[in-house]
Image (cartoon, rainbow, N blue to C red; front, side, top):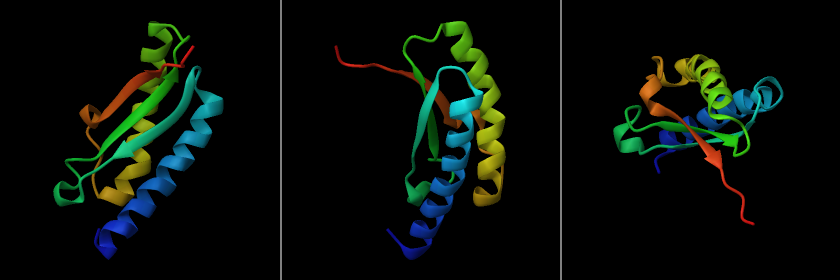
Length: 98
């Protein structure tokens, strides 16, 4: 990873951490988020995954997910220089082992 890639990674983590911490309290069923990126194809390869509790209903998950998309986009826009396309943001449920 190049020095510029490391700097970008730190900025992405900083911005997404702020979104994550606020979302834990403001969005029902939201637990955490993660991202992955290939800096050789940045920003097209950046993908953000929003993780919700498995017990939250599908309707609530979709409502909360739709509300979080613009927050993620707004947070990352100064870092990547353009709004992150909604198609690069996904939601999933956390499955706990029984």
